[in-house]
Amino acid sequence: MTRHHLNIIGFIINCTWISIFFSGTPMMWILMGIASLLFLIFLSLGILLPNRNYFLTNTTRLNSDSVLLTFDDGPHEQLTPQVLETLRRHNIGALFFVIGKQAEEHPEIIQQILEAGHLIGNHTQTHPLMFAALRQDSVEKEIGLCDNTLIAQGIHPGTYFRPPIGYTNPRIARAVKKFKKRVIGWSLRSFDSVLKEEPKLLERVSSRIKPGDIVLFHDNLPQTEAILERFITQAKKNGIKFAQPKDLKTIFR
Ligand SMILES: [Zn+2]
Image (cartoon, rainbow, N blue to C red; front, side, top):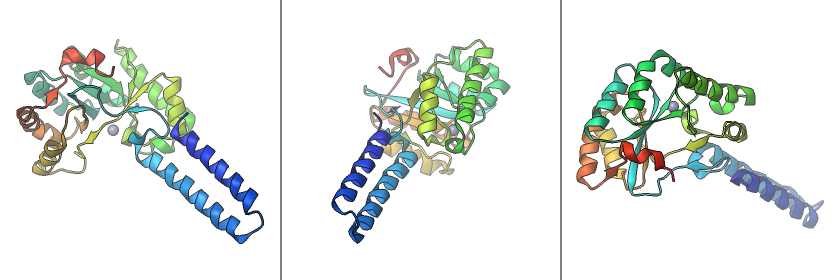
C-alpha cells in the first residue's frame, strides 16, 4: 500500500462521514472542499517530492556510514572520463544513471565506467523533461529502450532506475514494477544544474554532506567536474567515507 493509496482511502472516508453527518447543509460543501483541498495538497507533494515515497518505494539513503556519489545524464564525451579519473584517484565507486541515447553514442565510455568497477543505472532512453506527463506506453518505452541500448552493448542493464527530473506518478510506479526496477533517489541534491558558480556549488555540497548520504550530481556539467576533486578531498578530511568500487555490490542491502 503506497501513500497515494492511503490518500485516496482517506479522501473516500472523509467524503463518507461528511455526507452522513452534514447531508443537505451548507457545511457539507465547506467540509467537502477542505477534504478535496487536503487530497490535492498531499497529491501535489507526492509528485513534487519524490523522496517522500508517495507513489513508489524510493531508496534515498544508505544503511551504512558510507556516502554514495551518483551521476545523472551522461555519459558525456569529455566530462565523464574526467569524472572517472577523479574517482579512480580516490578509489571511489559511484552509480551512473545513463541516458540510453548518450550511451548509444559513447559505448566506449560505458565500458570505461564498468571496467572501473562502477554501477550503471537506467535514466530512460531520451530523458524527456515531461516524463511524468507521458502516457503509460511511452513511459515503458523510455525505460525499455534504455535497457535495450545497454543489452545491445553486451551489458546487463541491472535493476537501478531514476526517473528524469525525479517526479513520479502512478504510471511510472506501474512501469517500475513491470520492469522490476528499483528506484534510487537521493538524500543530498547538489543542485549542480542550477548553481553554475563553482564556489557556491562546492559550498552547498561540502556543508551538507553527512554519512549515509546518496548524492545527486550530473556528469555532463562542467561545474560538477570542476569541483569534484576539491569536494572529495575536503569531505575526506572531515571524516566522510565514500563507497569504494568493492562496496557497490552490496551497497543497497
Ligand atoms: Zn536527469
